[in-house]
Image 1 (spheres, helix red, strand yellow):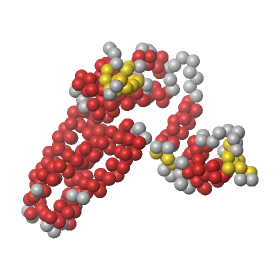
Image 2 (tube, chains in turn brown, cyan):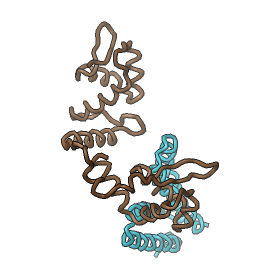
Image 3 (tube, chains in turn red, purple):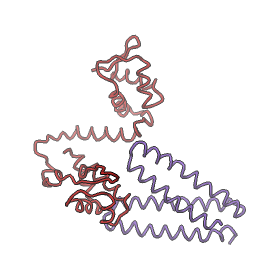
Image 4 (cartoon, helix red, strand yellow):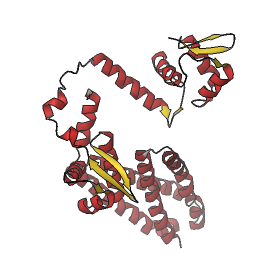
Length: 183
Length: 121
């Protein structure tokens, strides 16, 4: 488990309602309405907390007929606290971890539901955005300019700027109107 | 006290009462280490604040009770339109947290609107 995942886990558990939910799920899976009755919270509040627990990997959800059922993921909870904090064998590359966190934050801030909200001015951020867009292109495949435009337009209306930036940043190459991913 | 202020009195009292209630709830939730629920309650509190502020602005600008109603009531549609749009977007994209907060904002606005309608008549 990475440091950011561990932090997410502890943050998630530092809430009284979520701790109560974990306790309530300890003796078996339960559906949202039942948890709502047991904890005396509205079903939507329970769903909200279950989603948080699900994101931290503590709970998994599945549908049974009309009901959303929550199951506790005991694998994480059965671990010792120390092993969660200092995972054996894990070579924590702090720099890489920080880079990854920064990257995730930039993408989270600049993208909404897969759409790029704005083209960042800062080069480092722009590079991250371009690398994200480049994931849509298959390595080793050639693309016509029209195809490139269509793919980029899924992210942002200003596909011309982004297409040019992909070339300028060396992420893609172009020759005679044919584009491909570099590297 | 002018006629608008007079007619607005029960509505204002409702807003103040609800805000006090929510403030108490927030303090209670925070004392119980239920920070997320406290934050969601703060959203509700802010919505009450928004409609209270707008009412004060429209009251100053209005010449009569009817004029006030004509200015104030459309606010319930204008202010909630972006929230509805965000909610629809969140539902389309299975974004549970945004969906949850937008639903809270809209249901709070509906509650306030219902109260306004009762004093308007």
